[in-house]
Structures are given as C-alpha cells and as structure tokens.
Length: 369
Image (cartoon, rainbow, N blue to C red; front, side, top):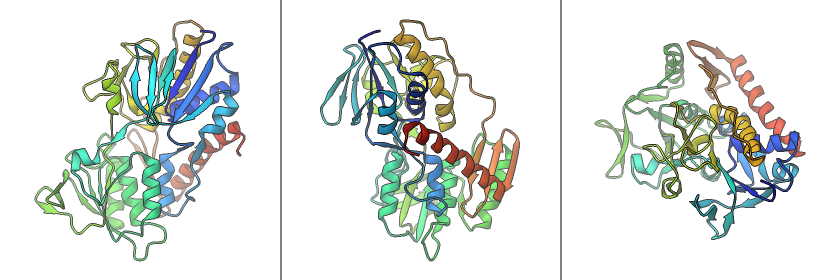
C-alpha cells in the first residue's frame, strides 16, 4: 500500500498501542501516511479518575499525550471528532466539516454515554462518557452534598466510593448507589461482591439493587425516591455512536461495529475497529479497558500486515480471567481475579503502581517524561 493513507479514528487504548508500535518498530511501509483524528490532545486514563476524586492523584495525572506520541511515530495528528463514515467512498467527516480520505481505517473512538436515554433528562445528570468532559465538569462545580450514582458495574462502584471520599469536601457527600436490576458487580465472584458490599456499608453508602429512573423531575428506584440529590452520575456503560450504524458497516443488535478475531470489519475488509466502538462477531466480549489494552498490539500487527498487502494474522484471545482493582477511596482497594479476591492498602498500592507504570511507558515513548 505504498502511497496510501491509514486513518486512525479516535485515541483510545488500542490506538495508543498502535502509535507505540510505530515508534518502536518504525512506520509501516515506505510511503504510507498515517493520520490520527482525535477530539482531544490527551487520552485520559479513566482508571485513575476515582483516585483523583479521592485526592490520591492530581487532575493532570493519568494523561497520555496523543499529539506527542503521534509526532514521535511519524503520524499526523488532526484535532476533531468523527461524525460520519463512508466506508465505500473511504472518507470520514469531522465535526468541523472537514473530510478526511483514507485507503485503510481503524476505529477506536470509544462509545457514547447513555445516561439520558436510560434515566431521562435532568440538569443534575452527569454522564461518565466522555471521560474528559466528566472530569472538567466535576472539577468546575462546588462539592455536592448528596450524590446518586446509577450503575452497579466496577466503574459505578469506584465512583460511589470516590465521591464519598471526595477531596476537599466538608462534610463528605452523602452517596447512594443504584445498581440496576442486575445487582452489584454482575459477573464478579461472590467473594468480591461481598467485600464491596461490606465496604459500602462501612462507608455509609446507601445501596439500592434496582433500576433508577427520572420521573417528574425526581430520581426514583422502584417505588422509592432517591431525593434529594444535587448530582446524578450515570455510569451505565457505553452506547454505540450513531455514525457507526449509519455508515453501513456491519453492526450488532446495539449498533457496535462487528469485527472478526483480527479486529477487522466483517463487512468491509479495509476497516478495523477495537475498543468500545466495536463488538466481536465470533465471541461475546464485554466493553472493558482491559480488552482494549490487550487488543492494541494485535490491531497494530494486523494494520502493519494489511499495509504491506498481506492478510491479517494476529488474533486477540481474551484471558479467562482479568485482574480488576477497585479503589474504595479510603486508602484501600479490592482485588478481583476470577474467584480470588483481596482487600487492603497494599492492593491500592499495587493499583497505583500498575496505573502509573502504564502512563509512564507512553510518556517515555512520547518524550514527555
């Protein structure tokens, strides 16, 4: 594909790995131009946001400088957000109206928030996605007195703990966690759920194992009101951007781009996708940063192959279990690995070490360390 253009749409974990591969091994193929399109200069690592809220990190920590990485990788960085994709005409339209042409494209733009769609509209509602917008709004507002967190996954649980221990808040916010009908930490081992439930009780966080909704301006769960609330956090997972389905790419029932084991579109062979914008056609795979991180090197290898006019060969086989470290905001964390669990200050120290090591490796590659 000499003289061709590879367009990387979005700056998620998988594309960070692609940039890192280009830096370590050199750009793919003579004459291939790579363009990175992202709405923000930095990728904010969402795993460190609860620690920032609890005063364990500074707001400026947990950032990967995408523009600096791109420059070191020989990649042109364009600031903008994809609003339309034409896979047949091989072009992307950005929010500024610019049209970017490509020969091969890779999508890692993440999903979009669905708080308003699932809960209803309310001026107090703050969706976790996009994460940079979430951080900016939280940083700009006065400490809330009463918070409702909707979403019982690991993200919602960590945010409930973090907001209960919100740095600079006196008194500490009263926090209610509404998990939804699936309950607390669905898919996690019973031992982990039990430890998290105990920690919620210990910290005085109210727990409602039912779906939350906004009804006549009031936050409700079942027949119970969750009012008063100054802030409503939607940690309800991601939805697919509308432009993915509208593009004509093959998608699953919820609109995510369907890809094979090589993370190649099942309908358009010159399009790849990873992270929350995609769904595997060959196996169920939950949307998790863990999978995006591990899929990154596979995506990089396959893009390199396709740009050399070779068939993609690398495949991503998820591990049977993934390590999750849940920050409880009070100087401790809870570890989950399959049926195994552990809790304490050492677990939090391990989490901080892993998170900062991940950030540091890309800072070194970008030359910003």
